[in-house]
Image (tube, rainbow, N blue to C red; front, side, top):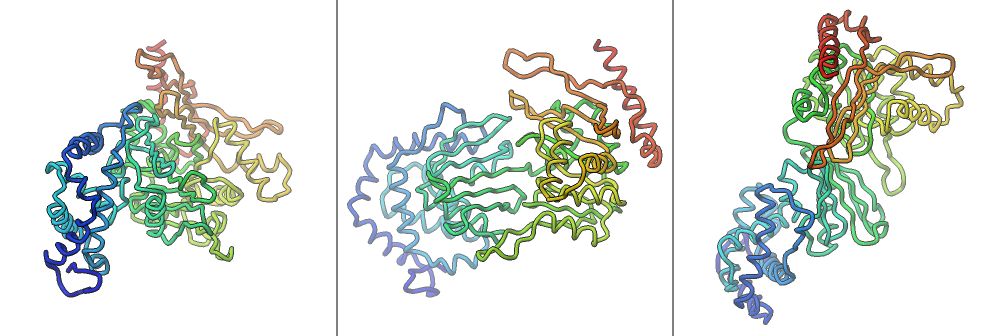
Length: 496
C-alpha cells in the first residue's frame, strides 16, 4: 500500500521504509536525538499531554510546553515518513486503517533512527504525527474532551480553552503558523468553505456541529486566530440544567410548558451565556408531528424531531456574488409550509421577517439575540428593524414586537463562570409608546461562598395567571402550569 513516491502503487515493504529512513538517518541532527539527555526532556514534555488525555483541566499556571528538541525530532520523523509513504494511496483508506498503516511506518522509522524514547513516549509521538496527517493536529486532544466549551488559538504558540466558565492557558502549540493555517483550511473545507489571504475571514462548523471561526493573516497580525465553540456530544435537557443550578425545578416546568404550547420565544443573553444550549433544550418539547425549519449561519442546533429542515447561510464567492443571507433563508421559510421557524441567531434585518412569521400563523417560533436584559432585547429588535432600512414609526415597530413575541428568556454567564437563567419575562403589550413586560421568575443573587462561587436562588414574582394562560388551557397544560407556579410561590414563602 505504501511505497516511495517514485514507486506509487508498487507495494509496501520495510525495505522501502528503511531506505527512506536510512537516508534521513545520515543527517547529523539525528545523532543528537539519540543522546541520553533527550530521554528526560521528552519525558518531561510528555507529562502535560498525559494530563490532557486524562481530561484534567489544564491549570492556568502550568503552561509548560514541549521542548524545541521534541519538535525538531518530530519534524525529522515526519519528513522521513512523508518520503516513505504514498499519500494518494493513504487517502483511499478509512481513518482506522490509515492510522494503523502510519503507526507501522513511524515505528519502523523510530527503530532505524535509534531514537531514545520509552514506549509511552513513542506512543505519544505516534499519536501526535497521526493527528497531524489524519486529524486536526494538536487540537485533537482538546476536541476529544467533552468538558471544554471553547478552544481559542491565538497564533501557533498560544492556545486557550474555557472549562467551567473560566479561560485557561494550555500547553498545546503548533509547529508553526503554516501548520495552523493548514489545519484551519482542513476544517473549513469540510463544509465547502475556504480561508486564505483573499478570503481571510470564515465561519464554518465541524462534523459534530461545533462552530468554528477563522481569521487569517494579513488581518490577524500574529498568526491565524482560530475559535471553536464546542457542543456536548450528549444533548442537554432542562432536567440536567436544573441539576447545574441554572434554573429552579419550578422554572424549568414553566419553560417546558412554554415550549409545548407554542409560545413565540426569544432567548436573550451575552456571548457564551448558553443561549444555543437553552434553545436546544426548549426544542425537546416540540411535538413530533410539527414541521420545523431552522435557519443558521453555521448549523449547530441539534433537534431530535423527525420532521426538521435545516438551512444554512452562504458567504459570497471571490467575485462577491452568490451570498445567501439569513434574511433570504427566513423569507424562503415562509414558502416551505413551516409550523415553527427557529433562527439560530438574530443579528440583523431578518428580525423583521421573523416577527412577521410569528404574527402570521407560525406560532412557537424561536430565536436568540445578543442582549444583556429583556428590556435591552426589545430595544435591540427595534434597532435591527431600523437597520433594515424600514422607515416605520417607532410605535408601529413596538406594536409589531409586542404582538409577535410572547416570552423573553434571559441567560447570563456570571462572574464565577456559572450560567444562569436570570429572567423569564412575558411581553404584555403597550402603554402609550412603552412596551410593558412582567417577570415570572428572576434570579436573586445572595452572595458567594468561600470558593468564590455565586450563591443565589430563582424566585417567583407571584404572578398566578400569566398572559399565555389561555394558550396553555387550549393545549391542556393549564393545570400543570398552575401547579408549577403554586409550587414556586410556596417555596418562596418557606425560604422567606
